[in-house]
Amino acid sequence: MKHRRVKKLFIILGTVIGLLFLAVGAGGFYFYHAVKHTAQEVYKPLKTKKNKALPLEKEAGSSSTDSKAINVLLLGVDERPGDKGRSDTMIVATLNPQKQSLEMVSIPRDTRVHIAGRAGYSKINAAYAYGDEALAVETVEDYLNIHLDYYLKMNMEGLESLVNAVGGVTVNNAQSWTANGFNYHKGELHLNGKEALGYTRMRHDDPQGDFGRNSRQRQVIEAIIGKGKQVHTLTTIQSILHAVGRNVQTNLTFTDMKTLAMKYRQCSQNMTNYEVKGTPKSIDGISWVLVSKQERQHVHDLIEGAM
Image (cartoon, rainbow, N blue to C red; front, side):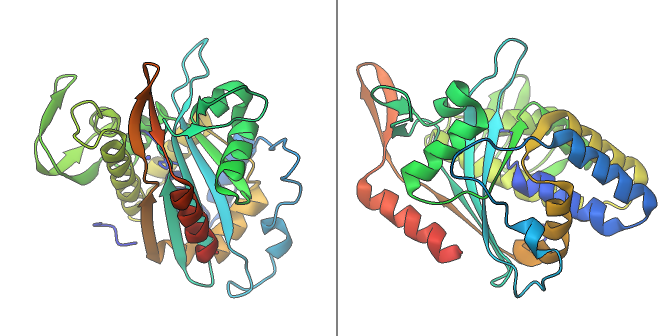
């Protein structure tokens, strides 16, 4: 991905793994141990029946052409004191080192689904609130009939720190609006942390609603990764790692992260995005996004085809 070309996340895999690529690749005693400390700080194993073996640790000695494709669920959560929040950002990221590709599939937060252990229908973003990242992973796996190897969760409030750590980001805004004292004019914008957070949150004034917001989220993700690739100073990398340590949880081990940095780094050279298509509808006063069986099958095939 070229640098000219994370609501707050994938601003997850893209941001965290992309920036950890930088820190691991920088080499040297300090960087190695700083990243290792951060990796240990954010590690939280996934407790589900389906996810037993993790593939990357077995491949540390393999070449990039031998490494398998993996799926990672990226969760962006608004966590506040006394409120664990919901995963308003949900992205399935497929990394394929043989194709040198990274595919991101965004799932609308209001998607109507069945959640294991819950009666009737729920919004897909409620799975995290009901059962943490384990139930969120299980729900997405069941809904799309796919396997998820890893998850990576980020508290959206951490986006502000990450954007500031890389010196701000530049995006191309499709429309003009004002929110929280900031004027987001149409065209190229350079945003600091607070401005970027507002940029990724707005949806009510967007004619595309959640779909437009998801597009802006991906813009910010790509911009953070691009800026991160230009970072070479110790102070900046320290700031990035500090922001990650305070706001991220994942079942990627330090060994997994090293393998990603060495074997999967080129995946960002070919990045594609897809938004799950659905129909917004109000049922009994509740807003939903209804996704057809045909679209679910299409998304399944899209992810499997990227593997």
